Image (cartoon, rainbow, N blue to C red; front, side):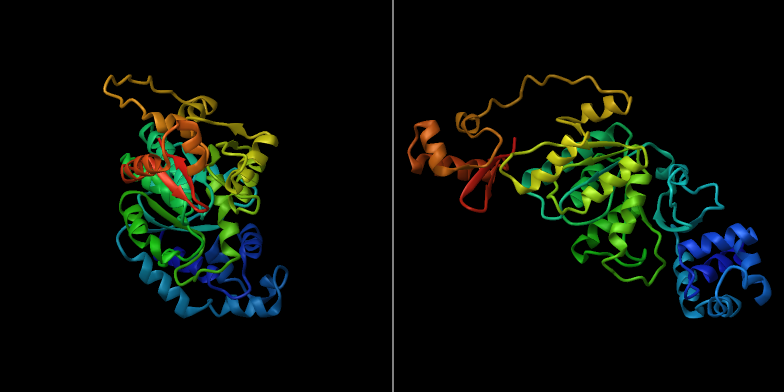
Length: 356
């Protein structure tokens, strides 16, 4: 892309009143951004209002254009447009592909098969462990993990992919120069170094509520399928799953306890036709990708009898005393030992949950 072409793209992206629909209409009418920016008032009058026509002919918001140009001058920063060969092909198959994308990191991940992993921001510890485990195993099988850099399931999925040395793409709802939430700053830096940060919003765009549901169509559009790990009935991840279904992608959901609010969204998806999955192999099989042969490790630790009593749903101390025949003091001591070992989690309401 020449400097003139880049400035023309940024000029349109930073023209007040020119949203995605108007920009798409102008590109269809004039062919390319440079032709739009050089068009006269009479030509533009057929497509936009006088105020927007005047703003286009003035060249857009000069300060915002310079801000974006300065960001793009840094190593590893990119502008992808519908006219670029590097624009993700899968997004072109969707109903509303972004006209332009700001990217930071490795563009080569865009060319590989990908899976979206999404879920609750307030995930349980088990939900985060599931997201990280699935992402690690699937990334090790050359699937790029796509998510939204939110707290909870999203962050765990990104961490799992990075831990496997695989690819991960974070589609964000801010400009590419802003990390939201701030708690994920270190994770975002790691993704920028080893994976890819992607946004349709220009540098300088702050966190605004309406932008996050909008970015979900990109998360699903980049992917062959969408795996929902945990979700309440009002979770934004259900929007991503719905968009995935509308885009012709596979939708997967991990079931959970019937008593957990964080499982209800997944259960609704399963009732509506999502594929119930219990392992990464289930996802690979459904996507017609190679499934690794499991290796039996003779050193696998034998489970503690109390863990067998717990099962895999939250349980109270009194119930464990009744099931195990141990005293409350003995059960408490074992639970503490297993919690320190990362095998049990204590939950609100005096409940405990097995993690292994």
